Length: 154
Image 1 (cartoon, rainbow, N blue to C red):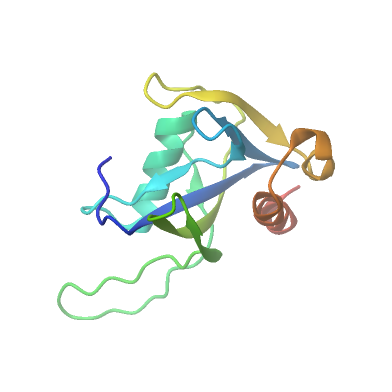
Image 2 (tube, rainbow, N blue to C red):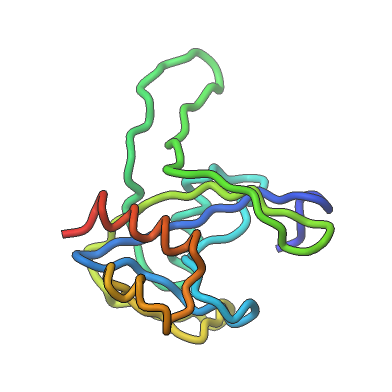
């Protein structure tokens, strides 16, 4: 996807939980464990972007978790699902991503990798595995993943 702006893009990260595990994917370009996610397109809501990215990257239909405020407003006003977390992080010396972090559940662990979204692996991590330093999981990813497991895990 082309960048919306040369300095910053809005993105989504989706922590998918099934039972006692959360799904991470080893990103082929960055060589690190990340979650499904990506850029929010100009014609979609953050929620739609999260659902699309999970489906594209790992083949899952998931349910985002949270509550959309029930406010009715005349016209085109639309309430959105609040993210669980937000962060901003550099992608290069001149470009940043402002990321909306969502939690989701999946009724299955049957994933697949698409032809255009390559990963070096997909793994459902338990809390113990997230703490195992041999996996090399970044602190922020581990923090969000463990929060998702505390909130949604069996």
